[in-house]
Each structure stands twice: as C-alpha cells, then as structure tokens.
Length: 99
Length: 386
Image (cartoon, rainbow over the protein chains, first blue to last red):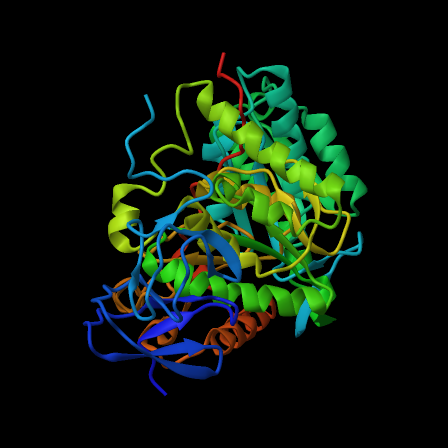
C-alpha cells in the first residue's frame, strides 16, 4: 500500500512526509509493514515531520527510536512538528547566540 | 550471506584479487599509475603524503601503507618509491611480506627515472598478475565480510531511506558474524551521547565521546565551531529540526548495533560486530582508512550523487533519490527510492542492499569500478606540511 509519510521505528511519535501533504487529508503513515492513518491539521512539506499522536508539552519527540528533542508546547495529532514547537536538548542553529 | 571469495594466507578473505601498485610518497604517484595502466589486474593506490611532514604524520603514513598493503583484496603488492621519502619503506615492505603476500619494491632514483622504473614495474606487475589469475574464489560467508560504511552528498532521502535501510542490512550482517566499520566522526556530533549509549561498556562509551571531542577541538583550533549553526538554515528549510535528528540520520547507517570498540584511523579491528574508526567525512581519506582497516566491501549511501570509489575495494553506491538514480547512471549501483515513494518498506530496502552486497562480494562489479572513478585517494594526516 502506498504511504505518504514514514516512521523509522515503531516507537517514533513523528512521521516524515515523503511528499508535500496538505492540511485536511488523512496521511497514510508507514510504520514497518503497517500503515496508520493520521488526519492532518496543517500542511506538511516534503521532508518535514508530522505528529502521529498528540505530543504533550515537555514530552520527548522520538525519531529513529531516539529522542531528537522535546515539545516546547502541546502538539496536536496531525500537526507540523518543527523548530517552532520542538527544542533540541543539544543546541539549535536558528536562534540568535546568547550575548 | 554466502559469497565466493579469495582466501588469503593471513586468514582474511578478499572480494577482489588485485595486484596493488602502491606509491609510497606523492612524488612516486606518476610511476605507480603508469605501471597499473599497462597491466591488467593491477591497480594503483596514490596519495599526497610521505614527505615534509612531522614524525607522527610520517608514522601515520607508514602505518596506513602497511595496512592498505595488507587489505584482503590485494593478492600481491608492488611498492613504488622515489628514494628520499619520509615513509619507512623497509617497514612497509616487511609488514606486507609478513602477511604472506608477495611484495616487490622499485625505487625511481635507483632505477634511473620514471621511464626505466615504469618498465621494470610493468614486468614485475605482469608476473604478479599472472600468478594472481591462477587463484580461485571459494565459498565464504558473512563472518568473512568486513563492511565499511559511508554516506556522502546527503539529502532528505538519506536520513529517511538509504541510511536507515542500510542499518537494517548492517544489523543482519552483524548477527551473522560480520565486521562493520563506521567512521565520519563529524557526522556523530550532536548524537554522540546516543551513539555512546550503544557502546558495549562504559570504557567504550568514553572512547566514543573522546573521539568526538578531539575532532571538535581540532576544528576549534582553527576557529571553526562545528556545533553552532547546526542544523543549517538549509537543513531547517528541508525539515531537519535539531542537530540530534541530523546526526541520527547519519548514524542510522549502523542500525542499533552495539559498538564493540573504537579504533584510530586505519587500524584493523580485533573484533567482530560494529566498530567506530576515527576519520573525517571526506572520500579520499575515509575510503583509504576503511581499506586500511581491512574493509573488503564498502556501502556508500548518497542523496545527490557522490561518484568516488576506491581502487581495490568495491564501493557500492546506494541512493534513495529517484532523480539521482535516473540522472547519474554511471555512478549508482542500487536505488531504494521505493521507500520515498511509499512502495518499499525499510526492511525490504535493507534486503535489497543485503543482496547487492552479497553479489558484489562474489565479483559483481560496481559502477565506480566500471567507470574507473577510483583515483583521488589520500591518507588522513593531522599535522602541518613542513
């Protein structure tokens, strides 16, 4: 079955879009052999992440079965997951340096 | 994995059976290449080192030539020396000989110039190639595989398809007893704590962290901050959110395998399973380092299309980018773009890679070998040229 996004490991709570996905469609997220439907509440560009389930503020964002950051606010299921709602635990490139 | 390979006297197994014409110093490169060009079954290894370097670097060059000269894919070796180099020619020749290989040395300043040295070298290499051609491949299995890993010219597809799929293949090969070598310390920065958490024991975890710190400090010493500004604006526009995510995309090549040990550049692992080797990310240095570490096949994932191969270790080019696959026909060996279109799972892509490694080990030629895109090699040195 065709997929619109892929999760790398079953533990991941984000999938990554393998094509541009508009808000309103139900994305078919591949998790191994399974395909899980996720209704999108925002546009998800190619290469960007979507929340497979809702992610609470402060909860770990998991990709590759590992923590890639922490949600800086609550993220709805099917929302865009990126620098505006995820904090790195190791530092990030788009913020100005601390004086 | 079942493949047919060349069994060497030192217990290693080759997936190729070349006569290696190794230049011991940059000034001997032209002769090494001229000899190899005239002998079927001989390949040249050249580099930019061996002279006007600090003692630690000259030791590194000598050590690496010893190791490259004993790569399992070499049947025999012809060393081409200028005569005045800093490389310890005697040690290189002795080490290769002690591995049970035939080794000959020719010295340009003694033979009397390039033309005469080339002529002598051609005749020696022809004799070696004739002997090599009498050797047959024999049945071998996964425990004879030493797989080197590399990713280059990465794009969005790398972290989503080719790298995690390679991780699937690597986990399977390791279960079957293979050795797998990952380098590119630069790519681990940001996820080194995660990589270290997969170490066999705390001592190994500490070595991983130390290797990353050393690489960062080397860059800092010349004013480069490797961590700040990562991910780059381009990465962020492309969807990468954190440096952890970016680096995890790179180390996905190794799957979730336990890191058994950590080695300096070009050192042969004394263990099976996954090992980390100090190296930069650049092809000439890392491919040479992997060959020195005994890799008999290399899996190289690429997004936009990196063409470089190695003279006597097959470098399999794998891409998840359909455009690259269709567009760079003379450089790509396998497409896993089906993962990006949603038609292939990572597990299925991993199986395709496994099959490709198996057939390559048995003799199927890679595009880099077919196109001869194997010249630009070098040895990783860290000191100044003096």
